[in-house]
Length: 504
Image (tube, rainbow, N blue to C red):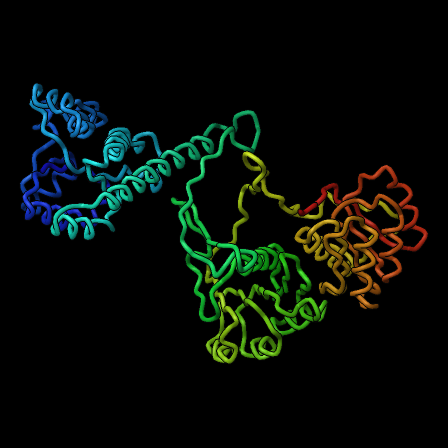
């Protein structure tokens, strides 16, 4: 039995090769793999000894040879194939152990492996006869099966599937790198093609509903904050738990506040948000925006959860609390509610995904990220009265919240606290009425944010009736003049951002 070993990741290699030798296998290897094996005292032929051809082109050509690929690809049940091997004195190869140049860790032309993927795919194609190993974590189980009489057909097929997934992910990483280094191309931020390789890492309690399955996948050659987060307690996460927790973490970070901030999410929409002097106050004010909707919500903070905040949390039915960290005393308090999922993100830098994808028939809808303007420098005051400093602070705050709410939306805020949020309405007037009803008089002297322009003055009038004295909206309606005139009539300061934030 002959095995060809050519690996970049050499973890477990010597022990595995030693096990093969003990089972009577002959080893063939090249380059650094051969050096590692012989330095460990193992006998191994060089690939050049088998092919009769030395490596060439600085190692670019080593295993690309008919002796290697004939030995791998020969169909053992086809007499003509075996006769051709015998005529050319080619020994069959019964195992290929290969993982590829570390392109993901060090992208570059010379780390694009050619011979490795070719061997891997050849062995995986002929997996009925050839065992293909690309993952060191499979070494022990394969040795155990060999020692027990042979690797089963089921195992061979599973290893072949893993091998094709391995090369597919490798090619996807190369394609993505080439997209990112094309010098800007024609200025299009979306690539000509998208090659995704995802690996299932977390089976969820269920999907959106209990009758649906759900799982979290991550990029094969990537990771996110979920992969390093600590879940201290709570029931298994469901699809919506993960989705809403992600939304809460994104929103509290998008506020970009140097002061303590807290948000409460429900069905991917904020039902409360606040920036305050302490995290306890921020949470209390976020909850106060809409206590009814906050029941069963997701809480996110940009500061460590304190014992005092935890004491307030346990009084409310909360599904998840996500925060950078938790004081030990806070964890002790939260342990009194063992079903609450306590998610500690740690010191991971928050990042906005560069693109979003949604399934449609036969493919995906793809767009680049909807990012907030970095400053308000491009905002234009369009009314006779400009906002006061306090109104500017509320306008910026309300605008950031509105960008995270399902459209159509109106957000009312006062003193950097959301007091009324109207979300997901088919018309802007109804969104304003809902926000005003929830605010219940608390928006007086505060700000109103509309994620898109007011098509009629009735939306502006609804904001005024709620007591808002400043409004931020994108502008761009054919009735902008009418809306501006309505604002001037009521002494409202209004600014146009020039940028819409629809969210569906």
